[in-house]
Length: 483
Image 1 (cartoon, rainbow, N blue to C red):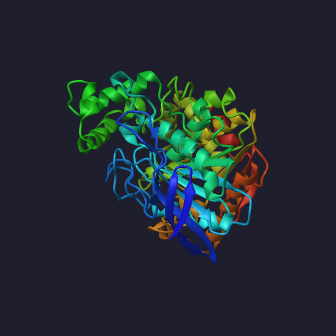
Image 2 (image 1 turned 90 degrees about the vertical axis):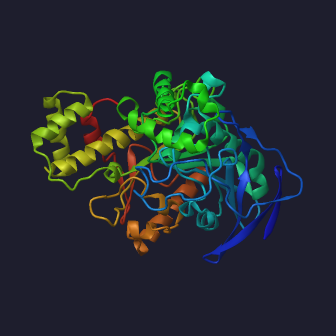
Image 3 (image 1 turned 180 degrees about the vertical axis):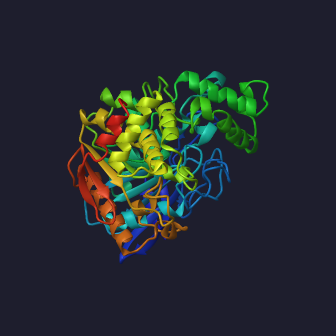
């Protein structure tokens, strides 16, 4: 047991040794409380010593939905609507003097699932190995985190407001853990990366971090007021409620299933993630692409990257490849062009990929439209305002057909091949070495704003044999037209 005195009160944590190095862990620290659909209220200091040896509850979330089981490590712990706003801190046990860079992690899960307590996010190795302070944070999810509740006395962007409150806690308290409040880097994967991008776009988060790492989190899905209203109306309909005021007091056990039902109904009109940050004059005056282009994160170094085969995780490629003409028509509809132009795009992908397999072409194109093109757009928007770096993560899953799919980089980031992740990625000594390479780069970036390779359009390809590439997706993305 180890104790530390902080501005928020005295905390009792634990010590873990890894590779002959030690890290102190302070878990389940409550940084805020919140009423339903209300802004987070920062928690003040408490008398006495608070136990910080166990993770706090996660935000309410569905279990067994369409995302469950796609990758290992699904959350199965305790949830609590009003007690979920907690964070965890790992700090090196050996204090050699001076302060250390701080890495603040926001977990992913399509803005509807996930928790900072998942074993893959344990910060012990990253902290002890890199001599850095590591923080992982919960935020509100789904309707409780991302419904536009302004019409019923609430606010919009509760989950994003939570992330800002967590960073304010870090600013005010992290020095007590040996961290440098002037060297905070935010990072996250999938929806966690989306949180990072929206923080970079928010004027309320300005000055709370010095660097940002977006892992597979760049999309064009930020909601406007009209689409946010569709989401709210669909949720009310799924609850069979007389009006939207019912949302204020419906039990969370009823709200979560209704949330899932409304998401299915909204797929065509809103897309795959209807519970998502939205444009809001208080927190998010513009979506990330426009905000970054206007200099919302001026001077903030940023890494924005993806895995090479993101969307294969969500595709069934076991069926026979469709005829080329059918693919051309599908691509035309998907890209909003005619079949002839769709055929030109397919030709470009055939040449770039070196294959005429229409399943392979569709998987690459689907990934590019949903993930690669938004990531490239965000990099282009930011590069005029600060150092901007690109990467591709190319370690393939052990299961044939998945490739380097969405989420596969998670265990490498923290060095935790647990909860089935080792089997999923086929972890061997090369995988362990690749994880170390990534953690070295992320820590170097947190220390000095440079991950160790040139800025865009150069791209670091992390794989069994990592190497620097020159704008490797240029031909494919150019064929799709402007962002």
